[in-house]
Length: 60
Image (cartoon, rainbow, N blue to C red):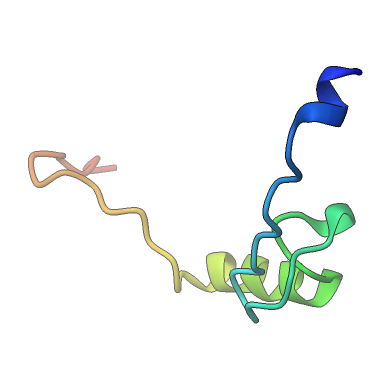
């Protein structure tokens, strides 16, 4: 028996946008639409990665 045959199947993850089951072709999303919605949120600045308080902004 191979290693893959002994491993249990990984649980299906939910799409972070609509919570439907994710599709292998679009991981971690369920469709191209949800992938594009996520990209648009990043481009608009809806998602922000917080910086540290001691970071000094570049004066230029």
